[in-house]
Length: 110
Length: 113
Image (cartoon, rainbow over all chains, first blue to last red; front, side, top):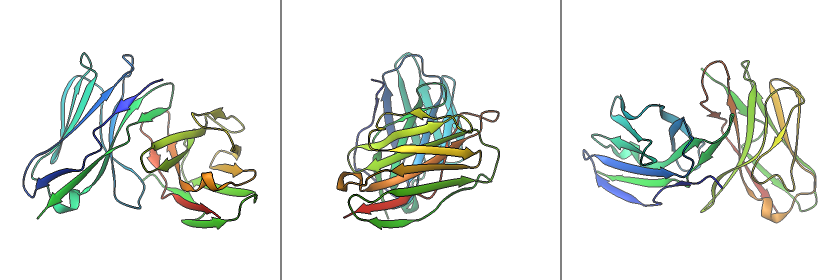
């Protein structure tokens, strides 16, 4: 059974701080990794994708991948209250399917 | 922009009813997926389709069936709804030639009484 693990949280950070969200996965052959943001009652929306070891930056978001450790993370700089949501980690687990973690709830306090 | 629509945002049905949930995409995406999402259990794949008239079981297909007669439309069918099928149902699409990213529709909150 392919697994993607995330701390359920909530992770609480003050406005302006860096939020660090972590994810581990069990399938060593996974090649594609995604972070989705989901507001309460809404559907997941893609924030970042990463395919190679190292860092990938997009605005305030940085995804980090370490395939040797089977670890992927998302850093959110200058966190805003509007970043309060559940963040889902997803890993490619087959030809076209993704396995999702259960998500980490992030709370950013003003 | 990728556009995925689902037939209803909220739906209330009775136990034993046959329920149809529809997902429609407006672009040439080959792959379509149905998930359900429950608190504490996360997103779980029910069925997916590679192309017209093709379907594959996901992790939790029991109690569900699907239909894909046209490329743009993928239907999830609950043959005889049960209370344990009360959930948020999410459709997703993927365009093979572009990337393996999946994009989600707005979701249908189904309540079975």
